[in-house]
Amino acid sequence: MNALPPAVEMRGIVKRFPGVVANDHVDLTVQAGQIHALLGENGAGKSTLMNVLAGLYRPDAGEIRIHGQPVEIRSPRDATRLGIGMVHQHFMLVQPQTVAENIILGLSRPRFRLDMRTIEAQIRELSARYGLEVDPTAYIWQLSVGEQQRVEILKMLYRGADILILDEPTAVLTPQESEELGRTLRHMVQEGRTIIFITHKLDEVMAFSDRVTVLRRGQKVADLVTAETSKRELARQMVGREVVFYIDRSEYPVQDEVKAKARPLLVVENLSALSDKGLPALRGISFEVYPYEILGIAGVAGNGQRELAEVITGLRPATGGRILLCERDATNKPPRHAIDLGLSHIPEDRMHTGLIASMTVCDNLILKEYRRPLLSRLGFLVQRAIALFSDRLIREFEIATPSRDTQLKSLSGGNLQRALLAREIASGGNLMVAVHPTRGLDIGATEWVQRKLLEQRQKGAAILLISEDLDELLAVSDRIAVMYEGKIMGIVPAQEAHVEEIGLMMAGVIPERRGV
Image 1: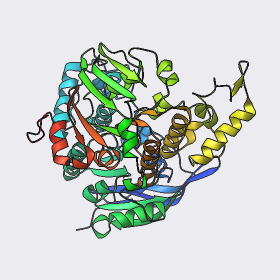
Image 2: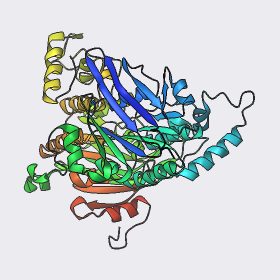
Image 3: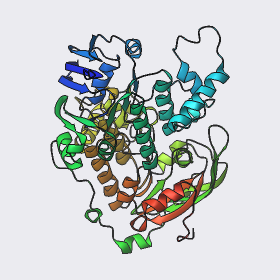
């Protein structure tokens, strides 16, 4: 009996963009019925290679075989016809439409009459089957980023894809949700599907994948059986150097006597707010963040974290309670008020809320500073000062860009985050709200961002860090507050926190020994 041919064979794939070779004669073989991890730094060419497979890009050279047959994939429709579906890191959803409408959008059937109740029931069954819970009748704009990720996965499953490409699927999930996704992927493989899993999380590569291919600077540098390698070896192959897995916080000392005398820079008192659906999202939340402190907020996506950040930064009205920024009332004031008080904001969605993709790197870097005397005079921008300012930030924050005049959308995810951090740190004061600041970043970029946060803390900043990555919260936070259904379940010192205890609070259970 002959063995099955590989599900995917890509040979000598070359893809060029102006000024860069994204894929340089890359070979990739993915066996049928396996989970194949694609690993590499931001900008290594992983997403480009998969966009070629998904029909979004045409390769400049190379060939593709699907199940042993040579194919030419000219468009996403061709890829869909071949059973290839891709869940992108930046979601391809229509915000004003419902979950069900997005899932069936573009399908040729049903041709004449839509029975939305039947379609919604099918989606509910599919979501329950794979543990991807989402309301089919909800509008996309009402969903958290994590919930939108589930919609993208369900869309591919609904369309019957047997080769499923997942670009950073766990970037928006908690550790528990990531484990559940791993079981879901295994279930898909047992049903005969093939999974290509793009990720920066080495733990998940080791836990979920059968094989792993490593790309660096557009070239394949390793193709390994996962069981025969290690996290440290994968990290070294990925970044070309030894990587620090756990940051030594003693490198960022804080003077206890100075911290003890400090007054809180952020005070939240009995805060309440509504979600986009008009339902209670925050229910009487109270906490304080002090200088020289990082307060981490843990919780499963959709439990009020997004609304909390938006209320503090002036992007969403509060229905009760108050907010003090630097001892001044900022309740229901516009975002400009918070900015003028020195608040920096790293938003959850860097591409739509934090940055303007169609503008240049330089323009994005000055978005908060252009009104200041340094960069403007008598209502006119001072171009030389702007050039010097942006070049300094590009240099100091190591933003890999051809020039300050490059359109931002051409940068990799890691460099987008560097640009966002550069602007917020340069223009802010001693108070920062950071929402998932390392989401979608490789291990090297994650280490860099976490060090930047600790540097700001060491300088006296008060940082509210909202993250669904418990390892990150435990690594950099001083205290961790856990949110569940819009409430604070408890606040614990990070050095005394246990993953199991935090996990219980994330599920709405108050640990007895804490008495909180």
